[in-house]
Image (cartoon, helix red, strand yellow):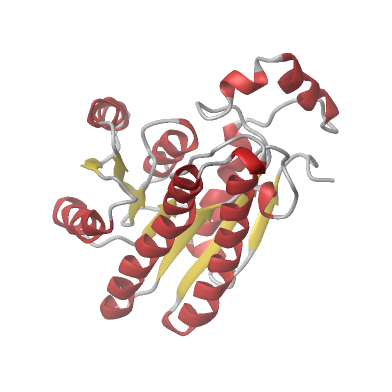
Length: 250
C-alpha cells in the first residue's frame, strides 16, 4: 500500500495541540507540505519549527474556525505558500460537559460552531476549490465513537460528532463525481488537553478500567488509517466512517 504524500498539500485545523499536532507531523513526515492552523500563534510557530527541523515543509496560519470570514483567506494563504490544498483534515474540536439540564445555550452553540458548523464551512470552501481545479482531493473528518454511543455528561459533544458523521456521508455522496473522497475517523478515548484532567480523577480512571483493554488509546493508533485516507490507496473509499477504538465501543 503506497501512502507517499510527496507533492500533496495538507491543511490541518486544530494543529496547536493533541491529535491535530500529531497528525500535522505525521503528514509532513509522509511527504506532504502542511499548512497548520489554529488560534495560538506561539504554538503554531513551535510546531512549524519542529516540522522544518525534521525536513518537512510547513506554513502556519492563524485561524479561528468558528469565524466564517477567516476560512477563505486561510486557504488563500496556504495556496500562496505551499500550493493548492489537496487534503483537508478537519480536526479542531471542543466539548461542554455537564447534565443536559445545566448546559447553557451559549455552551451548546460554541460546541456546534466548532465541531460541526466549522467542518462544514471548511469542507464547503475547499470542495468548491477542488471542483474548480478538477483534480479531486481528500477530506478527512475527525469524529468519535461518541457519534454512535452515548457519553454521559457530554451530550453536546456526542450530538456534534453524530452530525459530523452524517455530514461526511452527505458530502461524499454529492462530491463522488468530482473524485473528492470524504471520510471520517472515529477514535476511541485518547488523552488530550480536552480530557486530561478527567482521566486523572477516580471516575476517569474507573472509566479506563471499564474498557476491554483497560487502557487509553495512543494517537499513533490512528496513523495507518489517516495515511490510508489521505493517499491514493483510498481511491475507492468515500463516505466511510472508520471506527478505531480498541473495542471501547463494544
